[in-house]
Amino acid sequence: KIRSFNYNYHLRNIPYGVRLYKMQITGDDMCTQCNSAKETLRHLYWECEISKRLWERLKKFLQNYFNFDLVLTAKCVLTGLGNEGCLPVNIYFCMILCRQYIHTCKCLKKYPTEVGLIKHIRSIEVLERNIAASKNKLAVHLKKWQKLCTDTNE
Image (cartoon, rainbow, N blue to C red; front, side, top):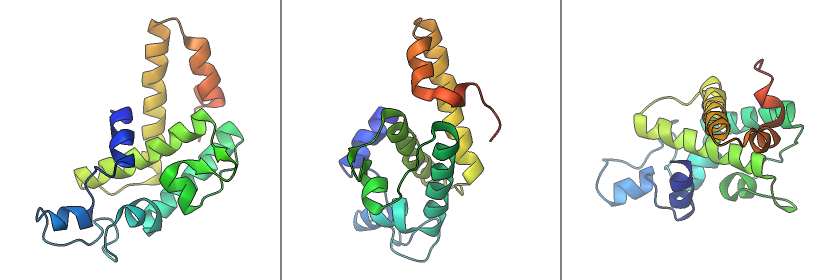
């Protein structure tokens, strides 16, 4: 699901207000989260105040668990590219999960919360840990997820 979402996200093949309105699926093109601007991909994943709070929370999460200071820019959030190029795999993956969480909440007509985002990331880590354990690849999993696997206080 995550790979498919990321693929479709980068192809701009996901539902967002302006696109759905042009296709005559919805009656308006306003953001479903804040209802204060047209819902473009840029607005939905970067400019919307609700999304910005999620990105700030993700930044704090990455600092706490991976000791990584993510510089939040539109380029970084929308493409996953940092100032020096590609981001570390675990950081990039968490960013994909944040975008997927925003997308899922939009589709389910649920309000995205900071707590919900962290629960989403943790649930994916647990799922990956179980798969890695079944394949005897826990060392690779632990290297990717570092401290998050052992620390449950956040």
